[in-house]
Length: 194
Length: 103
Ligand SMILES: [Zn+2]
Image (cartoon, rainbow over all chains, first blue to last red; front, side, top):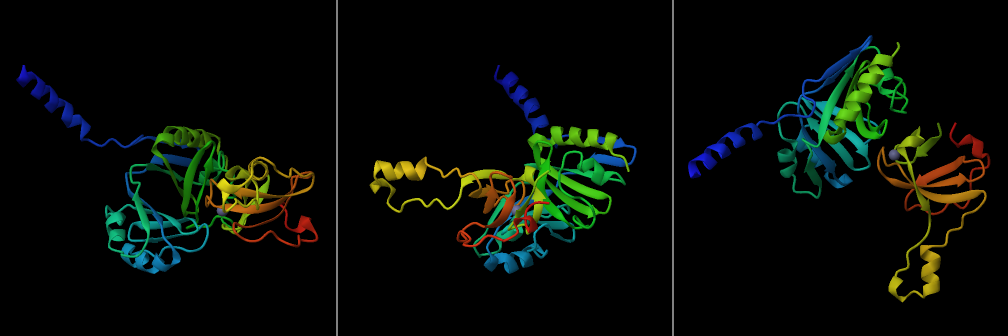
C-alpha cells in the first residue's frame, strides 16, 4: 500500500518540474508580418529615486533611461522607462538582474516578474499596422523611433511595447492575457496591409 | 480619438490610456475625526459639477501610471491644460485654449 502511494508520488512529481511557458512555440503570420512567441527571459520591475539611479545603472550594466518613452540596451539586457522612477528590465542573456540590484545598498525596489510576463515578437513590413489594430499610439518612426518603449494598451489588455527595429517590435504582456494578446495580434496580422 | 497631454510623458497620448479620477484640489482634513458631519459631507460627497471649466484628477493608467491634474471644459470636452499632481491650481488659464487642447 505504502509502496503504491510512493510510486504514484514519484510519477506525479516529474512532469510538474518541467516549466511550460505560456503559448510556447506558437506563431502566426500574415502577408507582411510574423507574430511569434519569444523565449523566456529574466525580468524585474524596478522603482528607484533619483539618488539610486547611477548606482543601479552600474550594477545592472545598463544606464537606466530618464526620458519618457525611451529604453537602453547593453549585452542582452534592456531597461525600459515606464514612468517617472519606474523601469522594466528584461534580460535575455540568462543573467539575473535581481541579483545585481541586490548589491546596491541604496533605497530601491526590485521585484522579480520573470514569469508574470511573456513576450511576443511582431516583425515584418506590416508590424506597426498589426499592432495598431488594437493599440492607439502613433507608431510612425517620427513618434515612436527605434528604441522607443511604452506601456500602453492593445484592445482590452495592457502591454509594454518596445521597438527593436523599424519593422521589429517586442510586445510584453501579462501571462494570463497572453492568449488574448496573441490572438488579437494574429487577427491584426491577417488584416495588416502595407 | 481625444488626445490628452500627460505632463509626465511630456506628450499627447490617446484617451484610451487614461482614466478620470474625480475632482481635483479637494484637501482631506488633517483632523478628519474631529470634523463635523456637515464638513465631512462637503469633503466626501459634495462636488462642484460645473457647466464649463472643471479641475480634475486624471490618471495615465495604461502609460506612466501617474496621477496628474487637468483643466477641462465640460461643455466642449476640450482639455485646456494639464499639470503635475501636487502643483497648485493655475491662477490663470491660457488665453486661447485652442492652442493647447487636443488636436
Ligand atoms: Zn504619462
